[in-house]
Amino acid sequence: MLLALSAALAGDASLPAEARAADVAPTPSAPAPLRFLGVVSARGVLTDVVTTNPLVTGQVVGSLGGTNSTTTSEESGAYTEERVGAFFTYSPAILDGRAALDAGFEVDFAWGDQSYATGGNTGGAFGGDQVNLQTRRLGARVEWFESQTVVAGLQFVGDSVNDPATSKLDDLVRSGGGLSLFGSEATGIAAYGKVGDRGGERLRYRAGVFTLYEQAFAEGDDVTLFVADVQAAPAYATRAGLHAWAIRDRAGGTAGIAGSGPGSALSELQGGPRLDFRSDSAEVAPEVDTDVVWLAADAGYNAGLDMGRVGVRGVVVMNTGRIYVADHGDVDILGGYGDIEARFRYAMGKGSVARVEAVLASADHDGDDVYTGLLTANSWGIAGAIHATHGCYLLFPDTGSINREVAVVADVSGGGRGLFAVTGGLGWDVIPERVNVSVGGGHARNATGGLGSEANLRVSASPFPLATVAAVGAGVFGSNLPVTPWTALLTFDWLVPG
Figure 1 (cartoon, rainbow, N blue to C red):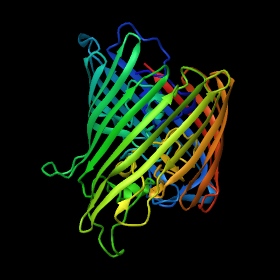
Figure 2: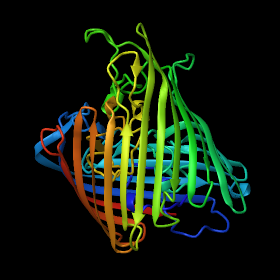
Figure 3: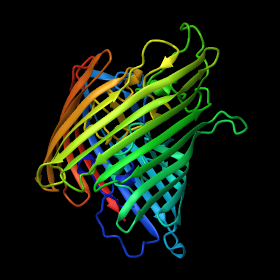
Figure 4: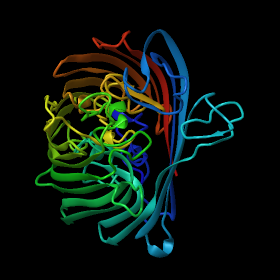
């Protein structure tokens, strides 16, 4: 469970905790029956991003200036938030490591927010008594044949061939869709496997089915996700994959606490499209069902920068399917998405890296018969997709945030209006693996114009192994918000191995 730590993303607390771990300890000759991984993240925040609704507490996600009640203000505010997570794997000795129980739990809170109550993402006030434990993993893992594993239960689901519990962070965010299309917990069953020889892995695969929402047990009104992926290693440090993911949504847009699907308030909240099929605003919104398929191809050379100094990777996605609208007729889906990134390690230290990345998503054109934009899992679940490699803090969501993850561009669909973005950064390990200085930023626009440009600076240090302290400053210029959004952060992240 202890995997490779990416220096550039060491603070990404919203990403799978297993993938944030590091190769920090030698693999024991015989695995211990109980293995543990802890995650501690704390951050002090000073920002002009504020919430205008006093009832909005706990977790705040989505588009800055959107329906989540966030905006910018002439006055700044400050708060401190913290996350503590614990992840366990228990494998009875009698099974010789062939089967295990995975469990993960988490508590998030802002200092002084609430006590003596019930609810997630709160519980840091005076007294502190709060029912707020969040279940992140709970399932069984069985190796039914050598290098062939089945996982059943609540687990992290990404948009690549890689098993989040046994993969490096770069394997998840720099392969397949890079978590930009899917990246959250779901309950179901998945099979992961590898095929190779003594010379190394040649092929790996994933196949799975997950129930995203189970509503009335006796009715076919559920939301189901199907995934199938294959990845080949045709040459040294080279990977190429083909992917097919599909959602069958028969919930009529009513699943979840804020609805679901491309016509829901949830989708709009998180920066996705909210398709309106009413002829006028006085009508009641019709029921909307969806069949949507993503077909993707990706390739990369040394994408994790662990086999050389240069790494490149890219993915292209075709988004197709159909939306079924009651008393309206069917609407076809035909959109696309692309992402390409290049990195170069120019000096000693994992953080001495220059990078540039470009993202392109198609825009929806006027007309009710075809939706030509992109859909992501953010239309079905809170924080359902994570664009993680951008290196921004406000232009795109800060993946290291704990309870408040808002951004100008919260979803790579651009709200259905399309997206073109270029991001980049330059980092330097002043003291290799100990002190790093990096600058970054990017520019985003859609079919109607520019969305904003970010510039940021980060200075980080490692006071002891697996711990990072960082100071960050970031601002976005040229946005349509009332005041230029900015933030200053002081963060502490610690991976606690068992």
